[in-house]
Image (spheres, rainbow, N blue to C red):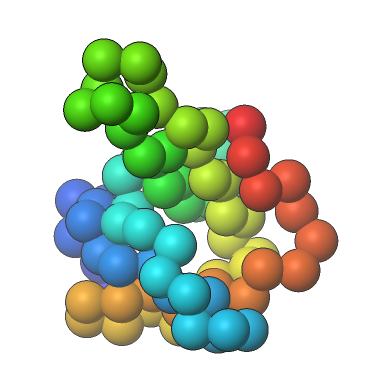
Length: 84
């Protein structure tokens, strides 16, 4: 199956460990040397409607992704830095 990067954006990300909805894909990280997708990024929630900035972004390594569905991405959060 092939996907465009734009099609990954705005998909809901859910933890398979406890069913928690982590947020929506806001961006991706790409290794430009190898051309591989290395992580998906969920933007942090806005504080006070964005006036006070936002929380840290959640970066999920590609190795933690279990399933990419049509509307949802399932991830297993094990050993990675959860925030930037």
